Image (cartoon, rainbow, N blue to C red; front, side):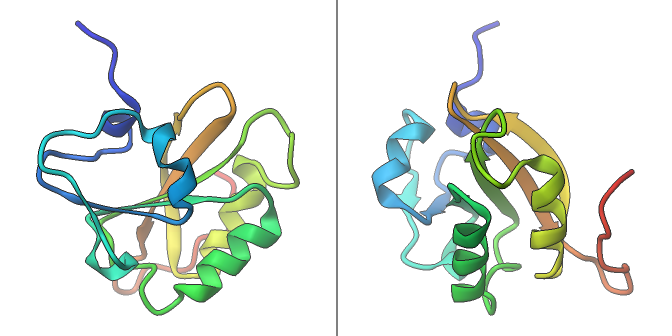
Length: 132
């Protein structure tokens, strides 16, 4: 069985729409499946990928898109691996939790970036507080 591409790991399906917070980093996704388009906004995306080099960037991007951030069925926040920044898996959970999202997956993007997948809270579900 062939190894999954980054796009496949990020759940990018053929014919879907992808929004990337930093288009200059779109090459990190590798080859995209057939028919994938670039969404003009977060709310139009099937998959949204936020690249955040630090906590301030994560908060800024999430704030800029606060009214749309729960719209995509799949939202990833990519961050530098190996404690090379002030964010990691454990510190990202509470930040993104403030936006009505909870973590539900993690993948390695490449040797530099990891990504956490988030989903919108379900009706009546309490805000995510982190931990297990």
